[in-house]
Length: 327
Image (tube, rainbow, N blue to C red; front, top):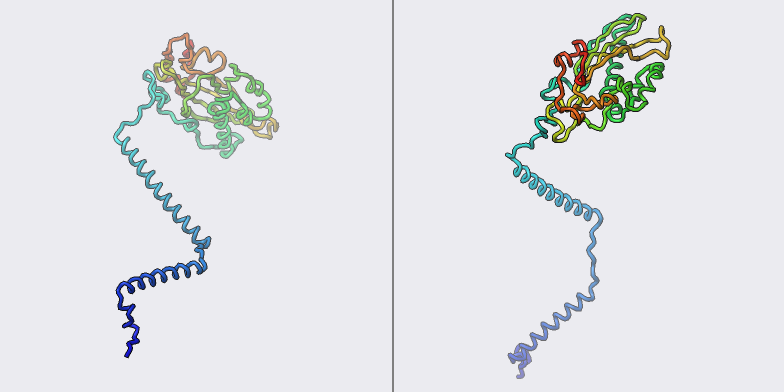
């Protein structure tokens, strides 16, 4: 009887035929898989805006943190490189220390600016209450600041800041002097600085204010003070601290009037009697109303002759000297 079972078919029993059949079956299956993939519609992956922004922010933060760490490490190395090195020495010109210009001068222990002027507590004087005396003190210190410390006066020779503090009639009286070019008359009210520039340090002051009642009912505030200014210098220009620090001594009365009994145009602040004295300044510049350091006089010895009584020269409680360093 003929054997019809598939597994006993003669072709299947042939090893070569079976090898080729298996190979053809594998190639056919691979081709069919490629065909199915080609026919399948492609799906594009697309992220929503929210996740994209979050991913961007995370990456940005990571980059910034890494950069900060690198910068910190670089700075740390820089600090380590300079650690143990001595600090840079301040500029010293022939014994004159421009970083501490007031050292070895009478102004070494004076306070900066108006802090050096002693202002007493307000007390009633004549027809002025304690509160009005306090207000008068403030007005006077504003006038001193405008005349001796104000940048408009020092830098631009501009007296507008001082004029604004005065009564209308007093303003009218001295305005021609304060709006003119640099003159001796103008320098009686303002400190005028010329081409020699000040160092970037505050002037030093010492002095006090006192009050008394005037004969006609006005309040008189007397300001007795000295101001020291520090000027810049180049090598060879100065040989001692006094060569760059001139001193300005002031004895000035300020008059405060009220309306009534005085006219409205006279109510407020006016100038009374005054006198002054300068030391260690350039004499040639002083003749034109300009305050300059002693070394600015090119035809004079750099080290000037000190005043006869140097302690009394700068002490506002002592009488004004009668002779200055210009002779």
